[in-house]
Image (cartoon, rainbow, N blue to C red; front, side, top):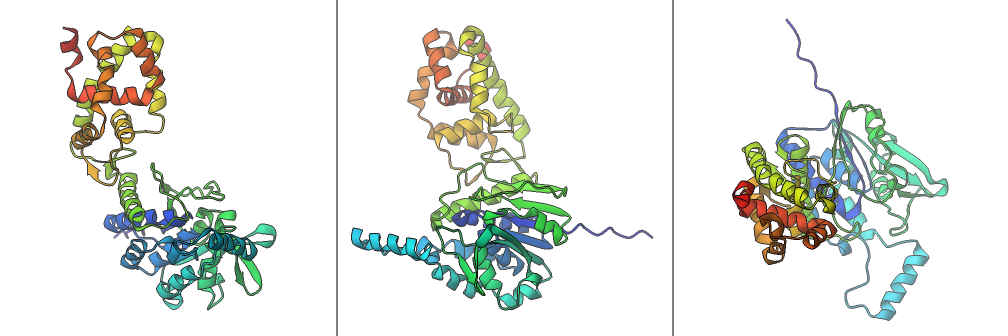
Length: 390
């Protein structure tokens, strides 16, 4: 009788990125729903703080914390309304003491991260920090961190110098792990991971190439996630939603690049959309070849990989459609039409109905994103090309 093969040990690698770390909580929510659990967790800076909470299985605590903390809860800032004199004193203190006071963050770490419970977890844990002198990297597993010093090393990994103060541990000053490796995939491999999910925040620092050779799912946002030192509950909520949908997409449960688009019915709806859009594009190409419309549109779509939906997604992004909800192809089109400046885009209609001229085609080439919106709007609302030509 055969035996069931054991699942490979999964590693979760959480990059640093300050306030952008809320994104990783949305990733965590999605992983939970997918039934994906890590046997190894490694992180740098805010990634190691989120990682420690993951090891402790404290999703609700992490979520609620991110939805409540503000910048003043993490670092010492001048009081609101501080005059120029007080602000100048704060700047002088910042320079003299080597960064902002992070005692508020120390309080959070002390309250929510239980070292004894962390050590008792079956999930292996590791972090990265850097000795300030000589910028010597320190990749440490939990077992390599002295008992009673876990909080110190978590804060050391998060010491985003020079904005935040270096962390002194037993006479040695340590800096943010991003000075060595902002996304420690190699450490996860050393701790026994056999496949990886790496969550990138595109924070400051050095992100080494993943040379582990392990099967890897990379989760990274198409969208800007905000200032790394500005902690704001509204931004955190937005980032969590984006992280959730990005993860579902990375695991094949959704499609799209910028927007979360449901799979059900999407193939037919996307094909129908392109059946309306592509002839319009080709019509403009044929009538005004000097405008190089296809090449211009290719540049406008360069960041998007889901080609059937790329024009719709790019137009929706330019129009300011909100990315923190689930769409169908049809509802994304409706959201675009509601958000776009229809009157302004209608100025390009002559290109599609045969009354345009070379000057308008040249304007389309000079304003590719605006023209793309006009093209998508016409495809969603106007007659089919054969009807126009007839």
